[in-house]
Length: 241
Image (tube, rainbow, N blue to C red):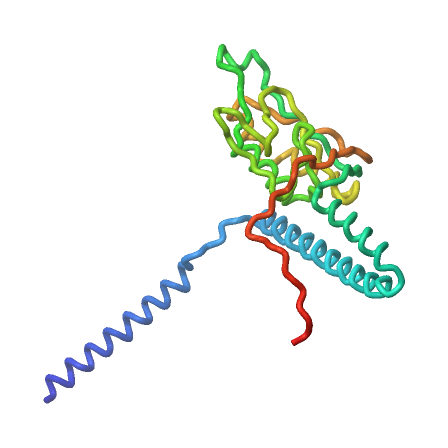
């Protein structure tokens, strides 16, 4: 009996010791360690705060629209409808717009560095990465080589050609026009693009990007192709049940 008691006591002690050891190791060595330095963390926090401010501004703007529409609807339904359609077209990229921003020029690096290599081509993956970078740091609207970029635009490789929607990017140099909400955001975007890692991605493909100084006014064309909607159908209005 005493022998069984010693065995049980030994097993319980071993299990408790093992659990304490595992807990201590977990505290000492967390599985997901954030290796970013203080400046990277600060930049990440600033980006999140800017995004939060932008979202709050958008919420207030939409609330104001709802209030205005409910007030004006009683007076003039036709004018309210026209105004709504115009705003929706503008948000969808179907109208020409202008405002502050920057211009990026994508071109081949110095020909002397190519050493007999074939002319460089713009990779759709790297170009999409650049667009994502611009959107993350303040871009409001973008046009690539005179082609308006909207939410449904696809950048892809078709038979060796990089296409933005239906527009082929088959020559260099070409420009990317980027509109922002204000000159302040344009300056921040300009400063970020000076040190953006996406520049290295283009350099690997024997390309370089020249970033213009922030401009008070640049113009973007309207999106001219039809927008196709899928898996959508009109809903017939029914009376109250």
